[in-house]
Length: 192
Image 1 (cartoon, rainbow, N blue to C red):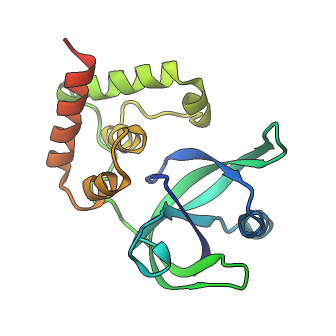
Image 2: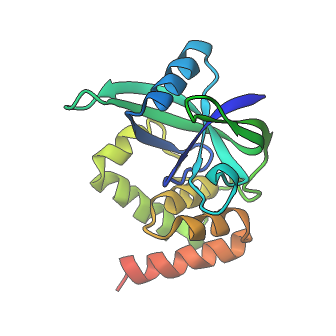
């Protein structure tokens, strides 16, 4: 299936939500078509030094809400349904990127897993972050703080680390290394 592609300096994984500000005409057209046809679009990180600045993997997102900011710009909330691989990318006359996409099971570690005693701190601190960030919490009507994969994915999305590092951790690292990284970071930041 073919979808419009929206590369941004934003990192999102399946079951994640984010808010986007849309102001360029090509992306306004993309949103209009995604709503009209109920097809969604692919959100991915903007990657330098690649064809059309696209990575190999993105997320197929659906628009869940929309509004306008004080300047009249369109704000949309999107939900990441699936990770997808992208092939045969091209640009149309508006410079909007499109590609053939294929739904993939990725990241491979993204499998619902109950939180155990070893990982309670990851869940509890994420719950505290959500409590202190009403804009973030407002995007998630049904948070899954008892699901380790969901908790890890949300941490990867919000951590202030480079997009390259997030991509590596999500798609090229094994789950044990990813957990070790998060435990080190969270333990150093939230305990003492």
